[in-house]
Image 1 (tube, rainbow, N blue to C red):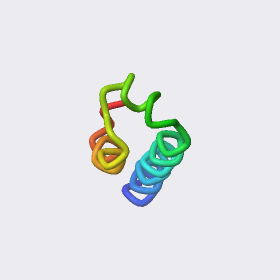
Image 2: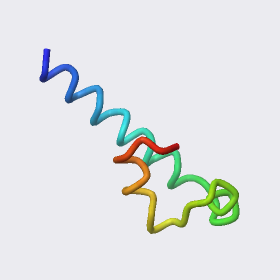
Image 3: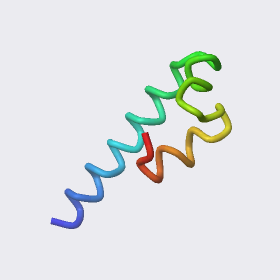
Image 4: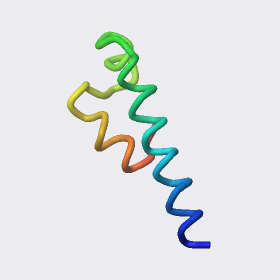
Length: 47
């Protein structure tokens, strides 16, 4: 079960990074984050 949970968490993280990376700098600013914060935000699940 841990393996499956870890995989799902990793996929959620990668999906979040990919989706945020597609946003413009203006759209990221509207969310209150910068491009350099994407990895950190995705790993914390803040968005």
